[in-house]
Length: 253
Image (cartoon, rainbow, N blue to C red; front, side, top):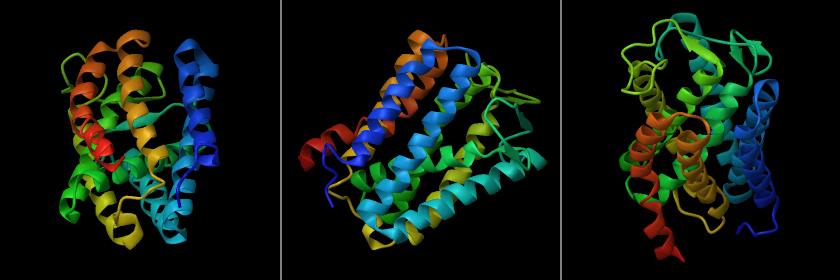
């Protein structure tokens, strides 16, 4: 089912972009509020897109793997320090269950779906898709964690060793992201059904979200948030899985 320009998917995407543009222009509780609204819009966009373009099975598979799975791994992480290191969430992101703000597993879901669809566009074999989608999702965290730590939304007890220029986030966290992303994408590849393993004519909103997330993150970190090193790390490593979509999209056009 094609996603037309005036569809609810494009409306959700437009609202998300607007909120993200406002984020670096605010401070304190207002900025935290924009963070929560961004995740809620992104979650609604990804789940709605999966349902409208791939059917109920794909949407339920996404929720089961990314939302429920994301909550489970975060709850284990907070309680045990595995697989992300020992960390704690602050209170700015809303209510918690088992020490995990309820908004956090929604963020996993928001970005897991475009990461998967991008991999579907770029690869043919299931193992390659799983690997590429997992790398893309984990690479996004090169932007996410430095930004959220800078805001005080969560903190590690022992944030070393860290990437050069990116204090506060241990390298082990990124390895934990990659490991869980590989598990998530492996289960999603099976659970999503045949339709979720093929490119769709209605994928433009999600691919646009993928490009926008990358480009806006590089710009925001480099110019507005005072995080030039995370702009560099994320720009190079996430760019390796995002930029190849440009010629792929031209071929599909």
